[in-house]
Length: 493
Image 1 (spheres, helix red, strand yellow):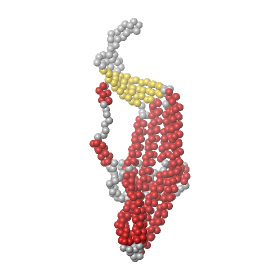
Image 2 (cartoon, one colour; image 1 turned 120 degrees about the vertical axis):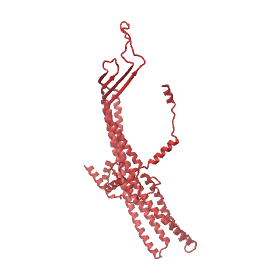
Image 3 (cartoon, one colour; image 1 turned 180 degrees about the vertical axis):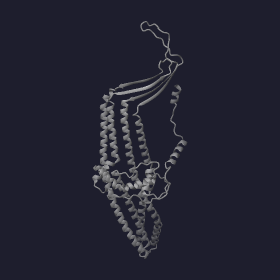
Image 4 (cartoon, one colour; image 1 turned 45 degrees about the vertical axis):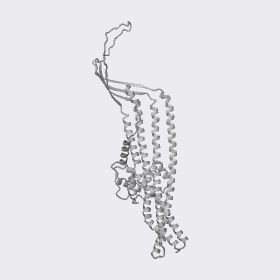
């Protein structure tokens, strides 16, 4: 015992060694992108979302959280079973346990020393016991664990919607950046030559220096706008790669294909959208499950007031040669009642009521937030739709103007500098249209999320392929109107 105490007092913190740190980091680096389907073609929006749901590490964490809650429920179910305890005790001593008998009245020793205990004895038993109070409380805890599983599922829904929305936003911005970069790089050499020619003309006094500098300023300004837009969207591809769990050094391109926005399904009256959102949103469902868990806590407090009854039945054996029966069956019952629980019950009830009031207050706050989100999402969708329409109209006008300038340049009625300037303007107009389209897609996804419709509502297993997930996502976006109609029908029923 002294040696054990000294050893315990000698324990000191042991930091991780450099080889352990290197090995741990190498293991995580090798595994965080392991067993992923390779990228073989340009990625569509549906495939990007599918890769995010299949390989995104945040989604995987939530999936494991849900699996852990399921295991907690399985463990809670075992608490409903009776206790079965098997024990074996070995008793030994270096001499015989003997004893005298003494007369109570005379004080004289009446017998010689005798024993009924062997030097070495082996005692074994197997006892089944059943506690009524433990069973009742375990049943309540199991029901609460079942609600915790459902809360984890709603949390996973929330993470799924967030990941899908982030991917939609990053995808279209990255696609716009991809197209802009390709065309901007092709025009840069021509822009540099045009600026150089303008400076040469201005220095040779073949034209007005003011006109030449004005033209150069226009080219530089247009180039600055294009590069500013490119810089704004350049990080989108890195963000998209992170959401899909693609390493930064893996190249990939975007096809620009995917589930297009279908805003007419959301052009319904505001109250209908709010009603559907309040039924479907995972945040409000979580509060309902938490309220259900709290109501079961009130029942647990009531059960603690009741007496505790325990029954047991066991088989016993003893190797002592002094026993007349070396094996026997034992059974019995025991009842107890903690009287202090009667005084604790009002405090426990007040605690449960306070928790319920807090949950209700949070639910009301969430309701207001959801109503606001639905309204804001609808407004953003309509504004984004208008902005996209204006951007397309501007692009159409710029396209027709560029066609006229190209025709004039072909007949030498327009200069090369003018043509380059309008081509740069065309590039900026296309980039702004792409930005408006990305904003429109983002607004559509926000309404979809605000209403609480799930873009993906299936379980993902290790055998689920990216193509299968992408197919389901495409169906869910297409059937969004039908699903919303079904939700409305459910509300009326």
